[in-house]
Image (cartoon, rainbow, N blue to C red; front, side):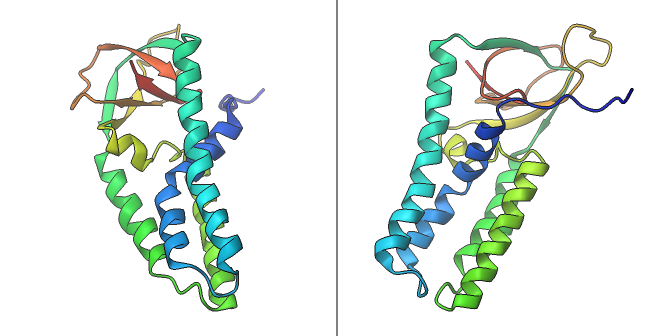
Length: 185
């Protein structure tokens, strides 16, 4: 018997959250255009990937509110991840924006690099990194649960909150967006 981590549900939502986190890039690409793909296809495609995942994420938030999908989470230790938004902007968004999309090979290399980034965001559970949350004033905390608590899951989870700090032992009521991402009520 192995002690493998339980598989997270909401796998499609994780993908949607990763795509939604890249919405600003798709908007920038729509504005810049592409040489290999005519604007009549490229611009709507970029706008689709910028808008639809964000709408699905908004739908999930409203569904969690409507169905009262609330969990009470207890903070044992919380790490503030404001720095992740800077990493997101400087490591992903800016380099991809400056890429030349006019040449077929450059365009293909950029798409391949984007797939690598999507995989890394997925694999490293960075799917909560979203400009929409930052614009709405949410801060991102990774919370480590109390290891002595036998009721809850021992796996870390992400809380999106407007608070500037999460003290130990604080209990937070939050809507469940996925099995590892929660947004405070």
